[in-house]
Amino acid sequence: MAKAFITGVTGQDGAYLSQLLLEKGYEVYGMARRTSGSGVQDGRLRWLGVADSVRIVDGDLTDLSSMVRLMQSIQPDEVYNLGAQSFVGTSWDQPLLTAQVTAVGVANTLEAVRLTCPAARFYQASSSEMYGLIQETHQSEKTPFYPRSPYAVAKLYGHWITVNYRESFGMHASSGILFNHESPLRGIEFVTRKVTDAVARIKLGLQDKLALGNIDAKRDWGHARDYVKAMWMMLQQANGDDYVVATGETTSVRDMCEIAFAHVGLNVEDHLVIDPKLFRPAEVDVLLGDPRKAQAALGWSAETSLSSMITEMVEADLQRLRTR
Image (cartoon, rainbow, N blue to C red):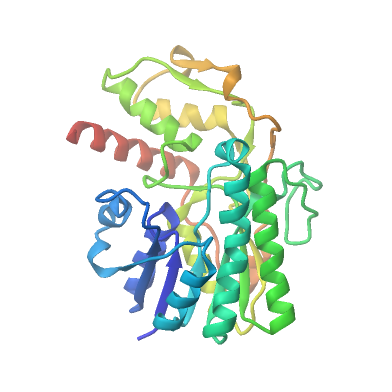
């Protein structure tokens, strides 16, 4: 039985990846920080019905010694580094924490793998935010990066240190440059889930308005369930490499809101309020991925449309609120 080790296992991607790997017969170990909220840290795993099958272990990306001990004791075949301070907005308020976790944490994990289980295959969760002020209309693996937030800068370090370990030490290390990917398990602070939760609340009469910032920003949105398949596929290749994972289509926040409101028979203009305080200090206006390399080399492509994903999220939020 192959063994997989996942940092950030309690997040959206960690939960879907755990489900996928368990279905494929893996023994799955997931790392959680000791400071994570007791009783709620495995909520996403429970939503998918896999919490009792994932072996949760204590560890911290900022503590090299803890990473070494975990790798030494588990001896995983595959390591998926999904752990991070992952919210862009928070990175301006906590830039040093973001650097320690999202940047240096990658080096700690790679070093622990190199020292204790160098044959393990490593996946790094890179981000489309690294492109920032876009240098090309469609962003590919060769597009220059121009990060526009402390989060994106930290992710860029994590990306390049992964490349460096691959080239310096011959490690099977891959980076997935994932564009925005959402699901009913997305954190409430992210714009898609903020929208779908608000739509559900407005439909049920629990609130009346939705406040957003730059609704003209455009993103390439896919479903996390599709994107974790690409992560696994990367580690099944003969050699490590970097891949853009995206749908190849871009949609504005405004249009995404219209899909969500229309699903419950509401008019977005009756409820949407623009709040200048919600604009980023440095905005990323457009992101649009070029997934042709992943399609050709991995045989991967996005399967879920934006409309299907948003309606799935709205229905999940309606279910949550009705249950409460």
